[in-house]
Amino acid sequence: MEGLRYFTYRRYWENKEYAKLEAEQNEYLKHATERYREPRIEALYRPWLLGQIPVNAVTEEFRRLAPRRKVSFRTEQASEASCSAQRLAGRVGHDVDAGAVGDEFFECLGVEGQRFAMRGVL
Image (cartoon, rainbow, N blue to C red; front, top):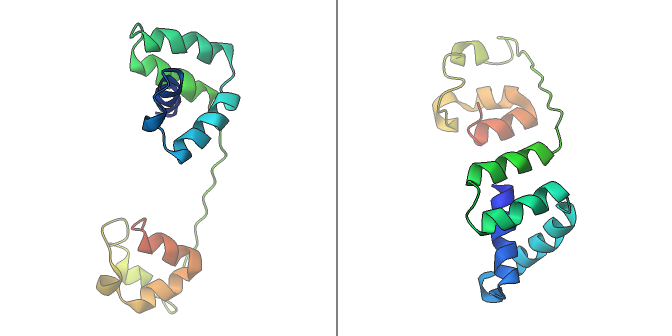
């Protein structure tokens, strides 16, 4: 999607369709123009503009340019004495709201766990 966004905003700019670009989009275009100064990207732009290549070719090439990110996970175990997590283990991973599980469950999660739980991650 990043590539299509860049190409679309660039097309607006080159066609002098400035009214289609808001300030935030202009700022994005400025930074994206610097970031995507690659011959591979330039080679895709004109064919995309003329409808000669499929959208997935553009998105795949931009995906190849994306930096790899290191992702790590950690787990923590709460004791049954300090938390009712064992009782609620069947509910974790499903739609859970604070009212359904009780305050003691969220207290044992710690600050980070509470943030995830409130966003529906748990």
